[in-house]
Amino acid sequence: MTPEQIQNLGDAFDEGFLLIGAAILMIEIVKGFFSKSFRGRGHMDMIAGISTQIPSILIEIFVMSFAYAGYVFLAQTYVTWTMPMTVWTLIAAVIACDFIYYWEHRIAHEVRLFWTQHAVHHSSRYMNASVAVRFGPLEGAISVLFHLPLIFLGFPPALIFFGILFVLAYQTWIHTELIGKLGPLDSFLNTPANHRVHHGCDDKYIDKNYGGILIIWDRLFGTYQREEETPRYGLKRDFSSVNPLVVWFSELPQFFRDLKSARSFGEFWMYLFGKPGWAPKAAEKPAQPVNS
Image (cartoon, rainbow, N blue to C red; front, side, top):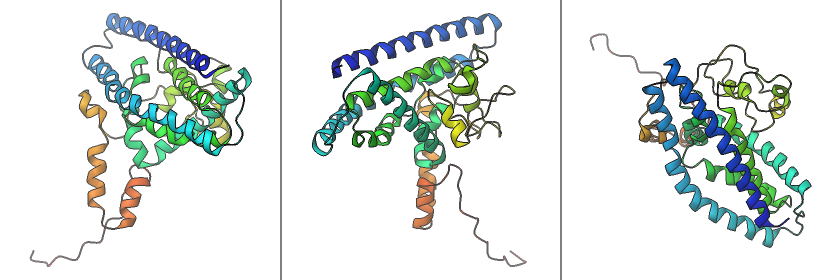
């Protein structure tokens, strides 16, 4: 296989999953129209979610072009052995990218700096196919960094980028309430039921089911939760804006306020790399005079 053939195959899969997602979205819109359950604010939320593609695509075009060139440079300069591009190494690349996606995704939930981008994906109170393309502007750039080790394992850049694309494209169809539980498939694949859990903000559902294609990573690393009652979707904090600009940068205003308020390097570091929601212990206030 050649890099061009792999790119064409990736484009074909991406377009195929996109068509499936578009078909699901149209059914959701029609169903919502007739049931009167998805009007007004629901439509505005959908538009706001889809609008996140504007900054995301603009940044990705720039970043991914340089990232691919950088991957090629590293592979040709520092890697002495490269895997052949065959069907089997293509499958291996997808599995490797799916494994890395699990950890990339999990870290995006556990590290404040990365959460500022990924929270955009979780900011909708709805669950429909439009949420599949609801991204923070810099999520693509972060993904490039996490997949960098695959270069040094001997994966050709073309296979790595195919794997990244395939893992993301697969997830287009799982953002929906139209499809119920799928029996045995729910045990090892990331399915709509499993992914609805991931978007839930109920205590039992928070930070669960990080897998991209395979849910077995969650079972292995203790983050699996099966769907029980229907989740309440969205962020734990009170956020329901449908203003596109607010959605694009929903976490950044408070993030920068927290960084500015840091009283030490330690606090600054924790605001950057601590868990979302981390705050320093309240300093004891000095006793006030009785007549104050």
